[in-house]
Image (cartoon, rainbow, N blue to C red; front, side, top):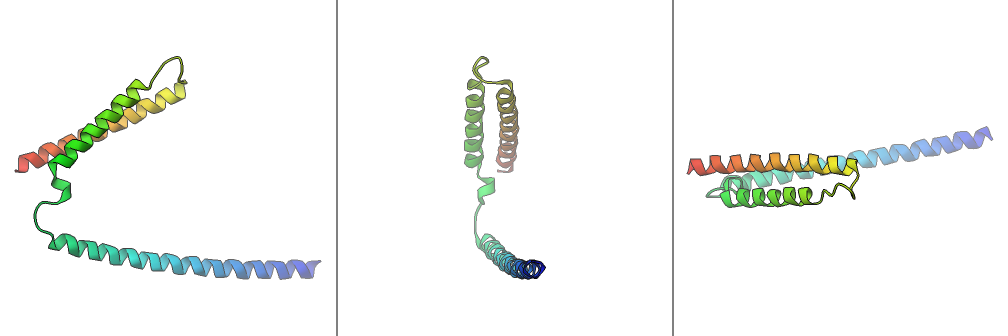
Length: 116
């Protein structure tokens, strides 16, 4: 019995060691690929002309409008008798988060418009 147990543990540890090396190799190759992708994207951003996507006022205005629609949907979905208190609190927190993000994007929009 102990012979089979030792043999099984040895085989299992060998398998786990090979699996560990495989994951290390895959993570190393993925990290290398990500670094190459970042380098390529930085080169493309450096060679692009004009104003970037981050400073496009229409995108921020559209995103703020979408967040406002989400806030209104969350507020309209609160029905006191049909929804439990946990769900109401979750929707209120989600609405607060969306309101904060909307204010962030509107502030970003104002600063971009002031630059022009």
